[in-house]
Image 1 (cartoon, rainbow, N blue to C red):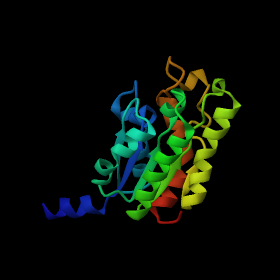
Image 2 (image 1 turned 60 degrees about the vertical axis):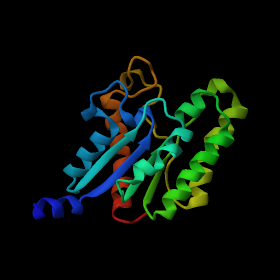
Image 3 (image 1 turned 45 degrees about the horizontal axis):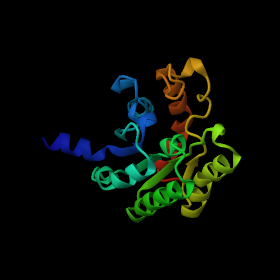
Length: 194
């Protein structure tokens, strides 16, 4: 019993606070982003548990409302992957910014490592909207001096072979590309090197 407890406490914990892109919409649980990330980290020799705190359809407001629950896991690293639904619904970018800012402020207070996963607004919303929205992530990363992945779906978005039939959610191969791209950054953050 003691060995198991010690082994469990030696595991690093990562929480992925996100929407359907991290929840694994349309995929078996083992193919969702958190599960694939955990497998990749374990294969690289890291004792880690990645907790899927993704909720399909969630906005930045929903993520903020669930933050206490996510922090109950006492993670060493939180990957914040929110904003896609705010943009798809055309919600005010300033509200998304305020919600994300509040999430990051709280995470900084908890002294956890943070990786902010950026999102881009659909271009059909017009340049005034998408310019304002897209800038949120780099601005907040700079303000809070945290790690940034500029676009979570980089290399996957708009590629039919890497997405499900809806054209919005990555398939297992698309998720694998996101994991491979983020893996070095996640490993650095777990080692305490932002």
